[in-house]
Amino acid sequence: MLNEDLINLSKARIAHAEDCLREAQLLLDGDEYKGTANRAYYAAFHALRAVLILDEFDSKKHSGIIAKFRENYLKTELFNKDVSDYISSLFRVRTASDYDDFYIISKEESIEQLKKAEKIVEQIQEYLRTKY
Image (cartoon, rainbow, N blue to C red; front, top):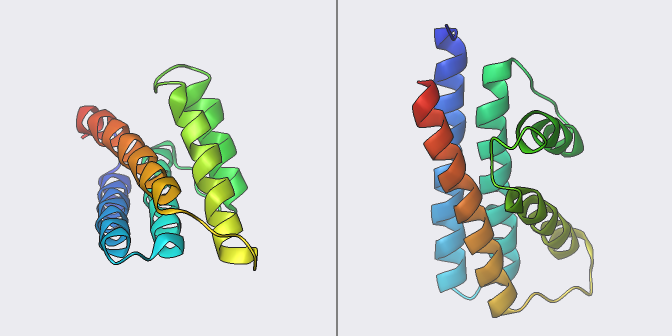
């Protein structure tokens, strides 16, 4: 039986992921492609954290969250293997968009990033419905 506090924290994190998806769409609609990539990545990141908190795991490091999710949920095939590629792409593009002064993200690439984040969040929402 899951602890009620962990369930509530998981619900708050998946709600945060959903908010990030909405923000990403608004930014995309406003032709703000770097912002779209940022919010798309964070939607996926918060969704991963929503799952991992149910295992009583959290980390301040993004790499720690991603590695633990891969170990616990992708290697065990609880989620589609495409999720691993999507996470890598989202992280890579978000990092380049945020920190590389000369990186230019196209509208098409930001649309793809948002679609990847939506797929991750959808899969995690389905999984979480089975947990609480």
